[in-house]
Length: 95
Image 1 (cartoon, rainbow, N blue to C red):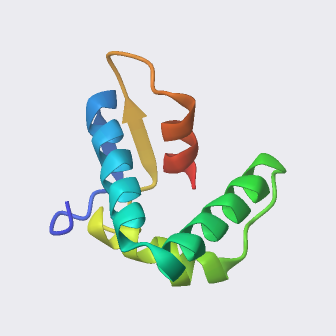
Image 2 (image 1 turned 120 degrees about the horizontal axis):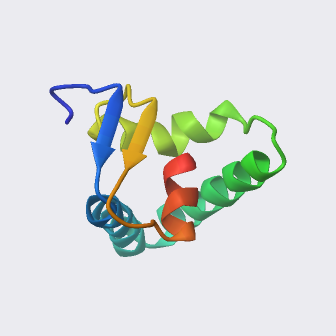
């Protein structure tokens, strides 16, 4: 994905769950300050999205740009089919 840099990503929930699990496992294994920074960024951005506001771009630069880069960096739409996604995975993908 990093080489192709897709703008639309169509997949099944199983792959989205793997992405979510992979990121969360990497965060937990990093421990300490990185884990706290990720959790703070995730919670701040999630709360901003729930309120309909834009989150601080600081969180993107510090935390989320690294995750986006692994997915190609240009994904604008993610489409899922075959079965429903869990709420926590949907929130993660929005953040």
